[in-house]
Length: 507
Ligand SMILES: [Zn+2]
Ligand SMILES: [Zn+2]
Ligand SMILES: [Zn+2]
Ligand SMILES: [Zn+2]
Image (cartoon, rainbow, N blue to C red; front, side):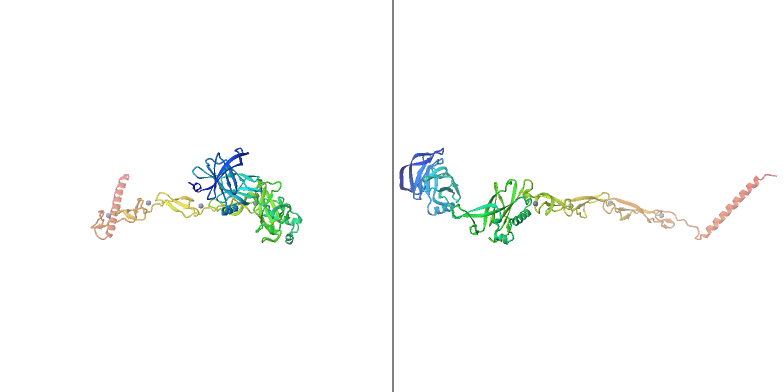
């Protein structure tokens, strides 16, 4: 159980009073509430919840709650004091005059944050605001009703609720005013810097904004005189502010309605600001280009110091983003290197300025072409069948092509005799293919004829007889032949003569 019950103190008040509460429909009605407030040692004030309502009396005011959440048995209100109040004061803009932790306990004594409960607190003061603060210190302003020393609001589930005095009007109220820039707005600083006419200032700023922002045309610009005004009497009278009224860094947020005929939905805006005096580390005549934030019907930007501000605009419904026009002009920014088959690609540059896209690209130059190596034999040729040579691109090994690697043909060099030469005829010799394919070639082994080899008148190899004369003198042969021829002639004449004699007619 919570210490709340065990540390109950004697300060028990029984009272009867009439308070205003909100009925469920929202209309305030007067009802009688008998509130029994208990205070414990931790400075908690509690009361039993009956029919969704409870009320506690604290030194900082009577807190009445209706529309308590389901399961809420006890209302707990803790007025914040000392360090807690100092902390909560730092969480809200205004000065806290009272702050409470308002919550409930269920039947088991567990905390239920007040969410959607209607709370009214009796406090004195008319210019009051109510804020809720979470345990992490985040504050939100709540809608509140303040009437006859009472403030009413609806809880949002936060731990703490703060009643604060509305911020008193500042002694130094400032505001930014925008009007057309005229010759009376030219400061001595601008004159000294050479900008002594509105035209000179406008020309300079227009040139800058057109040069820097593609699509902004000279006629689509407007020159403004932006001045900081301040009031010391709650806004009744306004004076032109000096540097002392500026924030320390000189940066002021300027909001301008968009120029006539333009819309944040269809236009982009570009701002250039010229310093009108030497201040904040800038020289009169210098320019700055503040980033522009587009709101609904207005643009805002931070500038350092004020006066002449030129706004340029571009209709982005008729141009690309920021007014660029990207056709097919190559920028100097490469998007992709050239490959064997594709030319290098460059981002497209704006037709009117040096900006480039990061999407659209155009080809520039020629493809590199493949750079083939000398090839490697990927399928060996045989003596009779072509093989395959594969060439690979040195730039990209996935690029290949093949060519037939010619058959080697047989190679017969090492002939061996078949030992088949005879005495009268050359033999043969046979070689096996040097490549080991098993093919053989047989040819005549020229000059291998052996010739007879006689021994005792006969060839010892083939057995042929050797022819020899009777004597060893060969001249006798001619004598014998001559004798034979002579006897043949004599014989012929004898026969011829005898025949003629027989054929002659007898006388
Ligand atoms: Zn451009
Ligand atoms: Zn290649
Ligand atoms: Zn072969
Ligand atoms: Zn022989």
